[in-house]
Length: 105
Image (cartoon, rainbow, N blue to C red; front, side, top):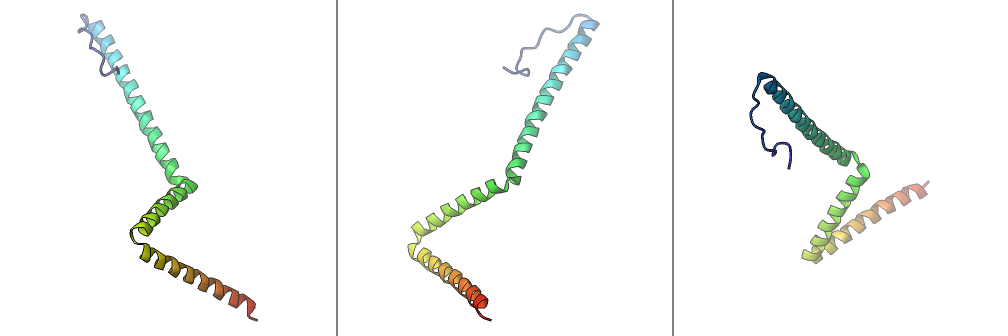
């Protein structure tokens, strides 16, 4: 049960009781508002920490890519094999060019 769910007391009888009642209600509202603001601030900080944590972002992206590649390989094995062969040829070509340029005088 939260402060907003609490049963309301009977109306104060005197003007002094009324002022005390209003002050207490405003304090409860201020406490509720500050707790809400703290919770929002904590969630904002957590979101910022997730966004700015580069290793965490890289691992999430690589996990998503692995899932996509596995799904692609399962659904279209011939196209996946062709793509893998193309990547291997491209990497081999780049390595060959680097080695050729380094070994040539």
